[in-house]
Image 1 (tube, rainbow, N blue to C red):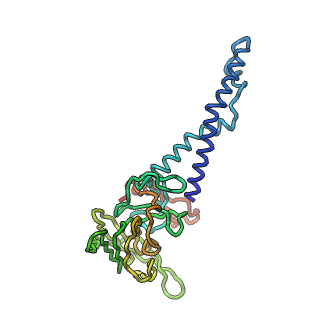
Image 2 (cartoon, rainbow, N blue to C red):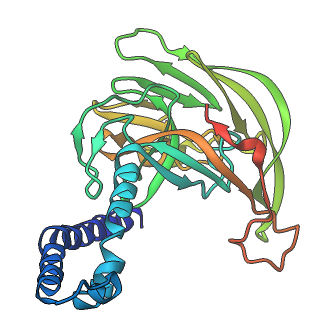
Image 3 (cartoon, helix red, strand yellow):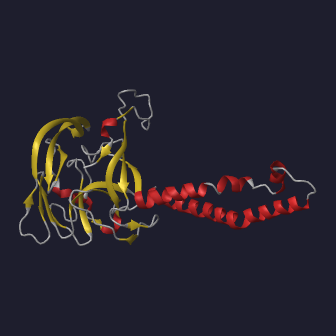
Length: 308
């Protein structure tokens, strides 16, 4: 959907731009000359109202040409500076919540063309801990957002909810410390019994110390790891990140489809770095279950600001 919108924006910019250029350098001068000729041939000075009827600007040009600079500005900002995204799932809780609308810095990892997302100019690379929007490798038409855990050449180990990172060139795997354990109001639904009934289980929050970055993550103490679902080799809890690729994980560690399950993110799939929440809506249906699911029930002003 995002690619289709980008393509539509490019097409709209081209069409309105062509109309704007032709009108400015061909049609508008022709109208001006026609008005000047009419004035010269008249025996009296014609007022502006009469002159405007001699060579009027077509309505379709009047309504289309002025849109060009507006659409072009939107295209430039959205393609090369910042693009808004909505958080649709809870895989990045507690850092990002469903209903958060974020700004993604498009130039953080290169200047890309707005349609094919090909890198035109290199500007930087993801750092460990960056929250990144990228094209989902199994289906690049879908945008995903996760935290950068592994850089090219790193060895990543994740077992029994413990993360260990061996940076490229290092001989030691560095255990990532978790501190400040506390209960939260965040819940995850899990099936119980054989009848498919679902029960809410509370999640536990920790502060994760990822190098110099400290941020919060969630664990579900009722849910064990499932390495049999890990990729590319089921049951293997260690990954070596290939060159020009990254290992991504969600902060909601037991409720995130990430690099553990579908593999690495190629550099070519990077879209940008999430830098701020510009608005956050609450979609609590308990407030009024008669409302459609897409209508917010409140605004979380306290969430507006930078993302860490």
